[in-house]
Length: 389
Figure 1 (tube, helix red, strand yellow):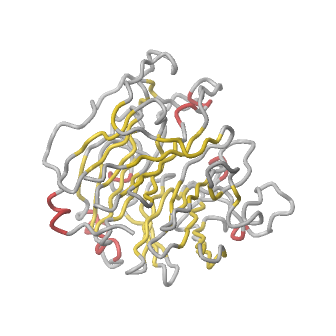
Figure 2 (cartoon, one colour):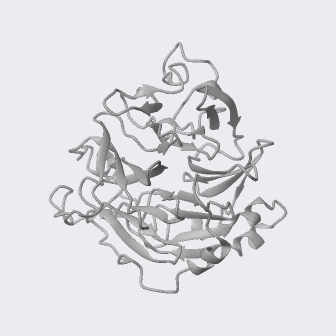
């Protein structure tokens, strides 16, 4: 689906030491309530809204080679309906692959086994074989993983039928875990996942279904020390006054499958590691950690994407922006505006089009003394990328 990044290009993309794109310090307490901050003027490419969701928070988006669009809605709040849906502009979201898989957790008619229904879906990804994969961390409202519910579900888009379900053991997805995003290397038969609940990468052998956690103690998968997440100048704090505990989140795989990029949400540093080392189960944690490299410092980000030219895209959640990191190591802001409110996940589609969701996580009531500050619907947007890039 995408062209390859060569090893030489990857090495060239390694940035020299430089000042980070944003200041590293933030005020310890917010000085103004959200809504009184003057946002930066819109600039760069103009996003076009594809769909609006007034009452369901959207996180993931993915696009097939035929241009079919799929999104997901995690079970984080009351009023949850479908978990995975196909989006046809002008129509209501269509539960996918069917209503049974989208049965609510509390529905008495839902299948008894959580492995046979969606529990709390966080991500959807179409691989290069045009199969849709649904990542279900199975932790509704972050209350803990439902036993037997953490899974990857593979769906054939040609038949709209589930091909298989890979259920993760509690060693891979323990109770406090939250599997967040995934990328696939179908050539080698591996997938790589981020686990943002406790912090780890997960390496999955797609042929055997066996998975293992790696880099659990490495700083790259945990919040950066001293980092404060501020959105539009408003510092986020949990109801108990503590900082949010978002661990590793964004992830992307080079088109040749040789390099994995990832980042903790509570931080601004993008890391990378050769996938040959991730696949080598004989490496000790220390030897594996020795292969982790700092790659770029674009911004705090919730999601990554990649285009046909090999450019990486990161969501700028601090200031409503989207960044492009080129193979030559150049970081640029390609779009920014108040409508890009917590850009969450990217999906690359036909016509050199980048799709993204706005999940507005910073507006949740828990960050604002029990009252949500959201004023616009959750959204699915697209950007027509510069054909010269």
